[in-house]
Length: 309
Image (cartoon, rainbow, N blue to C red; front, side):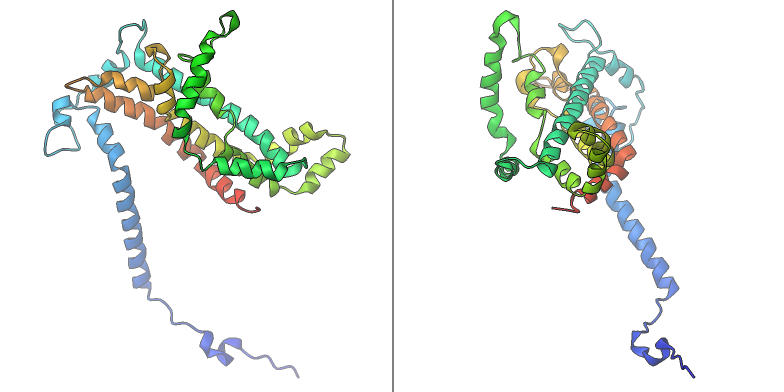
C-alpha cells in the first residue's frame, strides 16, 4: 500500500509567515508615490519650459519663479511660428524644423543600412583581420567626438573647391551626414543581435537558393526589427539634438537646424525667452513622441542585443 506524505507537513521549515494584506497595500502605495514623485521631478524642467511659452520675458525672469503664467499669452506660439529674420524669405521656424527633420531622417536611413551591412559581415562572415577590425572599431568608441572637430573642419573646408563646382564642405549638409553614415555603437549593437539569430534559418534560405544579400535582406533584417528600431531611435535623437556639427559647418540661416537657429533669439543684452522656450518645445516634442511610440521595441532591442557576445 503506497503511502503519500504531505511535504508541507513533513517540512515545516519551508513555510513562511504570510505578509499582512494591509502592509502589502501600504507598501504598494508608497512605492508608486515615490515613483510618481521622481517622475515629476525629472519631468519638471519640461513642464516649466512649456508653461513659460505663454509668459512674457519679464515674467520668465521674475523671482520667485512661478509655474503657471499670470496671463496666458496664446499668441506667443503664432508669433514664433511666423518669425522672419534677415536673409530668409520664409518663416524661419518651419524652415529650421524641416532642415532638422531632413538631416535626422537621412542619418537614420544611412545608419540602419550601413551599420547593418557591417554588422552582418562581422556576425556571419569570415575574412582576414576580422577580429582586429572589430577590436579597432570597439576601441574607436572610446575616442571623444570633440577630438575630431578641428581635423574634420579643416578637411571639409578644403572640399569647397572641388572641380566642376562641386561643394562638399562648409554650408552644406555633407560634413554632418558623411561622418554619421556608420557609427561604431550601431555596428556593435547589431552585431550582437545578429549573433543571437539561429544560423539554421539562413542555412534553410541558402538551400532554397537565396544568396548572401537576399538572406541578409529577407531573413536577418526582419528578425532584427527590435534592434533596428533601437538604433533608429538613438540615431534620430542624436541627429535631431546635434548642436556642434551644424554650429561648425552651417553659416547660412536658411540651412541651419533648429538647435543652432535658436541662437538668433539671444541678444547682447536681452534674450527673447518666449521664442527660445517655444523652440525648445519644438525640439523636444518629436523626441518624446517617438520614444513613447517605440519604447517597447527600444527595451526589447537593448535586452536582446546582450543575449550573445
